Length: 466
Image 1: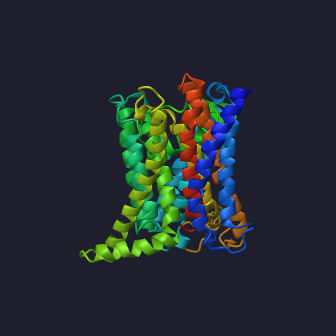
Image 2 (image 1 turned 120 degrees about the horizontal axis):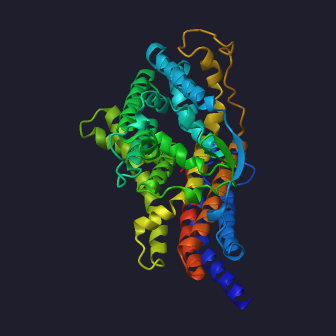
Image 3 (image 1 turned 90 degrees about the vertical axis):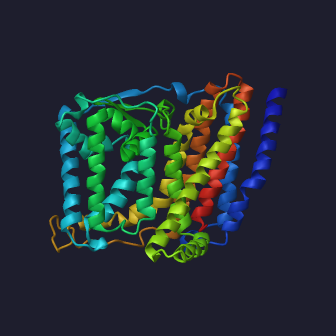
């Protein structure tokens, strides 16, 4: 009992120190409402204080009530078997849908609002599908058009050579940086013709990779979007083994995520690009960005190139900030690991960033999917933007008042807090298997608490208008 009391006091002291440092950013953010809203149910700074308090209480509770690893050895329950033909039909549907998007991109109107390609790529494909995979599992693989084409060509059965293990997921990291840059910085991101070229180039790279290294090896390591969905799907309560659908506890699949080079970097890039999306819309960047752009323009660059260079620099800084925060936690744990290399620890705890990555995506893109996703109904009937009405839905309009500012703010805060608590749970569970000494495992998690509070503060600050 005395030892338990001592542990509680020690954790409370650590928590007290964190409170003072973690609440600096949220306090300053109170000057801005979320999206400019002034009718929030309670002040923004109070949300931030509450979020930090929840994380600290979770940290203390885990140390006392979770003495042994649970998620690491949690099993699955058998569900049902999918029809054999379903995978083939899904592949055909994926190829057909990709073909429709390409036709819209090259033959449809150049107006962004009435062409199917931009909304489908950036709303349905890039945001909605990964979020759906957190609930339904890896739903992208059966519909992946490049996988379907590769299977027809027999690429999976005659790989030229084995995929280099040392590369790991670094090709996917590079690809996600490029895609994030196109979404947030590239001035032609909404140009249907440019998007059509990007889709074809992306497909050509994936087909070449699968032809050389095999379908599964390439998609698990080098295909940026396939890797993105594959990683996030480990958090889902649904998993598949061949044609069999299995049930599992949410988050329990994440400890089984393969630890290969580049996994932690993949998640840091996802967090960094989403962070820059929030930063670029905030007041701070609106002050810094134009000044940087003017400085680059003074060097003789065109305004368009200067703005893209400014955005590239901001994106790199955002990713670097996320990497630095995560490395702080890894460096702290390394001091207690007695010889474990930092890269090894970074990989072992990489899966703890998945709930945070999901939380950031929900917080930043929830309203986009709900509001702008409504446009897909009209665009499906008139994908080329030429006045067609194939399904009778061309007259549907977007209801921009569907979500109130308070609702959006509430979803954002709940997503951030839930995601970071999930990250704490996963980190605590992994620490119990990483450190043989229970006390050292608990001490290591003080550093992960710093990481979680840091990401929470950053997320709330960005949502508040930076």
